[in-house]
Length: 173
Image (cartoon, rainbow, N blue to C red; front, side, top):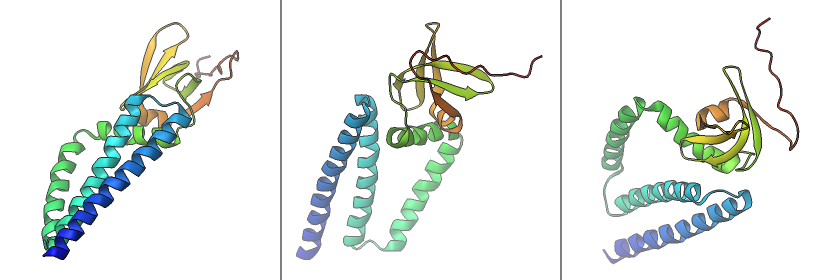
């Protein structure tokens, strides 16, 4: 019994140390990329939740719950969450895209971009990148919110300062 208690305490300490390490790495990456505090907090919460989930699963196994019991419980939770999120697939895809944008998007707040979307002419300066969308301030002063998932699916051109955006042929003669 003492061994189980020590192992559980070890898992908790490991969780706390890894959480601090991940927080530090995310913070350093955010400073390098000039990311807003809101996005840093969001990504930190997601990583902590994933670490907590893994830690609870390990603790359950250490306390003697069988793999079958844990897998039955987790599969039930995933089934309910999956059904609930299936109806909201676009929200889930935007949240996932937000995490991908945080770690791999080559453009930052303040960059002038043009989204090469055949349905809409979008050229302006990125004013904010949130959990669900990228906010772009257009040259005419209007603000456009563009979904994160579409930002990853479309070609995005970084427009050099002073350069004119590309003119697109819309097929009208």
